[in-house]
Each structure stands twice: as structure tokens, then as C-alpha cells.
Image: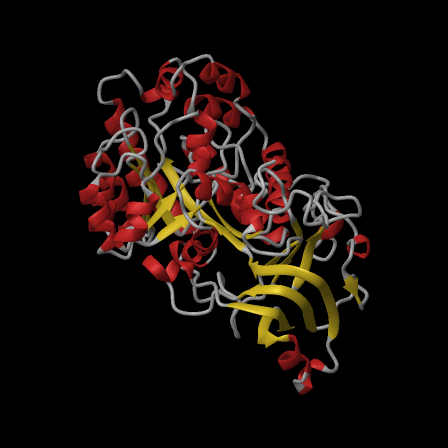
Length: 490
């Protein structure tokens, strides 16, 4: 029988995160007193329970019901010269500066003047593969030379390459690598993210990943939502053997899923339903087992081929169907009639150099719930930057900046069943927000590959802020009528 002994993942001897209070000085973050242009009128190492944030040129509240569909995806609830009053990690008041400063409870609050920056809800990245041991840069080079993702996988690369590396890695090394990644997520404005297992593919390694999710969730400020993805691929030791795939399915459904549920290590159960991974029938068996043990279904759907995974996910009440590059009109109509989120991952297509992206415009116009995520992973989307994903959503998926921001905040929160707590800046919700050093929210995706996030706040605590000299938007240059100005070709 399995798991008579307990698996214990020990933290590194010297953790990167000593406490939640010193996160701003760890792993590329900087002391908050160095924030350029931010008039902080308090000791940031000893914040009071009330914080008054002023001076937002545009405060994007995204107030209103979730999820957002169709034209509602463009509704950002912008307040000019906006302000927020935070109390005990929650949002106590939202409005214009004059309105919030006039409130009696604002008088004794510590004040933070943003000096005209843009404020929006912290990004909710609803699809990542946080725990892995190393990059797959060698495969990147092969892909550039013309090898396809599937060709690389058939030669032992792809997911199985990452599996081999992870099985050899210590929990300490994996935790340290993931902690550094979480620092970068926060630096880009992400405050909540989903994290999948799936690079272990045996009992010990899959549980090791999920236990690391739990450990990291406890010791650093970003909220990690855990998903079991044992059905990422059939591991090498089961391939090419009579009944191998069936035996691995039994390991997942009879042993691993019950144990994951018993230990409370995940909220969701995912399956990669595609050519070279799991069939629709196999995926249904896995997701049914997950549901029977209280794990909500998610599906990797229609990425490389049209497998029917979208229709399966909708039938099973999946929280999301992710990828969807090969989705057809019937899939789009079915998603539009459902509450299953269409989570789009343009970073993957960009990194692999693929011409076909998910049909975002058709999905939005049909009324589907569309979210955006990084798909952070070592093989096909090694990015932690939601601002870069917004840029790709605008340039490649033809989403407007407003649609992209809503998809990366409130709809991402809905995909993780957390829309009542995060994803908008409304009274009573968690004070999770990102501050951008731009004049207009449209400049966030406009400056592609540039991180203009200057501050990240999680549950009312400043967890990241840029140091002097950090990259920000270029200054606007005044011009005379005789000089080139806006709208003039460069």
C-alpha cells in the first residue's frame, strides 16, 4: 500500500524569506525608503493598520460583478485623482482624493502619495507551473532551428526532460528557485497565482511539489493556489509497455488523487488532454476521480490539436479550459453559454514561434469568460511578466488594453474561485494592488518587454518597490509646432 510513511518537505536551512515584513529587501526587491518619487510619510518597517493611498492619476477599480463578458470586459471603473483607504489588509474606502481625505477615519492614517501613477488590482495569474528544476534552453535552440514541440518531446525532451531534472533535485533547491520566481512575479505586479504540479509524475515527486506550494504559500506574501496535474504526461517508466498508460491512470486515480485530497494539498485537478498526452476518455476518468475527492476540474484544452477537451471541460463544470489555440466555432459557442473560463496563454505561442494564437476576439464577441495568464514554465513560456502577457494579448490576440487588464485581474480571480476576495478594488476586498509608473493605463501593454510596475501591495502591505534608477517610462519631451509630435511618423 502507498504512503504508510509521510513525506516531509523541509525548508532550506537559510530561507530566502525570513518573514513577511522583510520581503521588500529580498531577492531583487529594495528597501522601500528608496522608492523614487513616492512620498512615503511613515516608517515602512512598522506600518499602522490604516494606510491612505493618494495621488493615483487613474485608479482602476474594476468594480462590479464577476465574471466579465463581452463589452463588460472593457469596464475598468476608472477614478481620476483616485485614493484608497486600507485597514487591516482590506479596502475600507475607494473614491477621489477629496472624498477619501474628507472621511474622519482618514485623518489618523499613514499617507502614501503616489505622485500621479496608475493603480489597478494586483494581477491574478491563473495558470503557472511554478516548481521546476531548470530551464530547457537547449530545446529553445532546437525549436529555433526548426524542430517542433512534438518532435522534441518524442526524443525525450519536453515535459519528460523537466521530469528527469526535477526528480534529481532536492526540495531545498526547488524551493529556492521558486522563491526567486515569486519575487519576480511580485515585481511585475502579480499578487495571486495558481501553481500546478506535473513535473514529478511519480508519487513522491508530485507530492513533493504540492508540499512545496504549501510551504511557499506560508512563508512569503503572494497567495498560491495549488492544482494537481499528475496527468501532464505519461512518465517514461510506463511508456511502451503493455498496459503502461492504464497502470499510470490507476496510480493517479486510486492512489495519488485520494492522497492529495486527504492532505488538502490542492484545490483543483487538471489534465493535459491532447495528442501525445491523454485522450478525452482518459482525461474524463482522471477528472471524475478528482471531482469525487473534492478537486475542481481544469483542462489543458485544444493546444496542439482539437481533442474535444473543451466540450469535456464544460460538461464537467470545469473552472477553466486553458490554451484553446485549436478551438473551433462549436467550442466557442459552448464556452459562451457556460461559466467555464477560457484562459488564454499567448506567451506559449510567442515563445514557440507559432503563427496560430487562441481566437480571443471570437471568444469575447460570443460572450465567453476570457482570462489571461503567463503559463510560466521551463519549456514553452518561461516568463513571469503579466505586463508582457498584456502586450501579447493586445498585439497578437487583438484585445484592447482594457479587455486585457480585466482578463488578467477579475476574470483570473473568477477562474480561481477567488473573485469575491481579489481581482477588483472594492470595499471589503483584500488590499491587493499594483502601482505603475505610467500616465495612462494603456501604456502598461504599450511598453512591451518593459516592467513599469513601481510598487506591489498584498493585503495592505507593500511587498515590492523599485529602487532609484529602475527602468520606468521614458519622459515626455515637449515639442514646438515645427517639430515632430504625436501622430508624426518617426
